Length: 247
Image 1 (cartoon, rainbow, N blue to C red):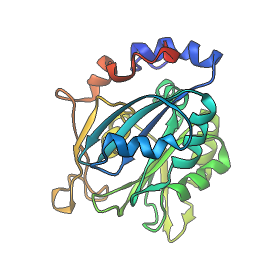
Image 2 (cartoon, helix red, strand yellow):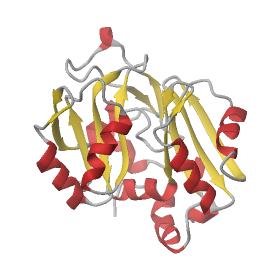
Image 3 (cartoon, helix red, strand yellow):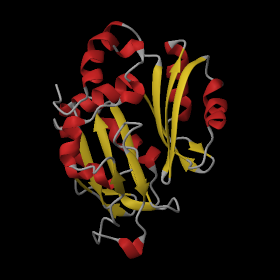
Image 4 (cartoon, helix red, strand yellow):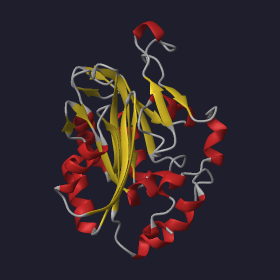
């Protein structure tokens, strides 16, 4: 069990194992979407029981609770890594978010550097999925939607992550040789949409003139009541703590 996971998630793990998941977490949506726009996007897949949405400079996030698990699964299959108004969104079942938190620092998450700039998130996921179930995957982009040349893949099982690590590191993919390593806690700051929360906000994405790390292309700037690495231990996501299927 990940000690950094919030209390609602720890208590929700037992519940999610007994019943299908009806909630989805969507992030990296295009900025300035209104709540009605989010509802229009997700209502095609089934009845929405409740919706929470925040809009940030680098993109919006939302938690959508459906009336049925089938609707939630359809939403994920259609929206995850799809282009929504020109921006690639990520959409995960809440049970997948729980699994990510549980395995965040246990060898399931890989950091990938030197990615061919022509490869998008779906292409990266297609490659890593050859080794096992990938819960989440992303190529980070800048404020103009251009690849920064690095990304991550989070596996369900650390054994599959180990196979991908040993096989792909140093391999030529596209027009570039990639470097793969185990992700570190500090890597979370390099990505938008990776707090898996509606309370942790991304204020901006650095441009090239603000780069703090030459090859990385700069780090995203987080603010969450003086956010730092230790804040994960105290994180309490009140926005989604009232979903009864997670209690």
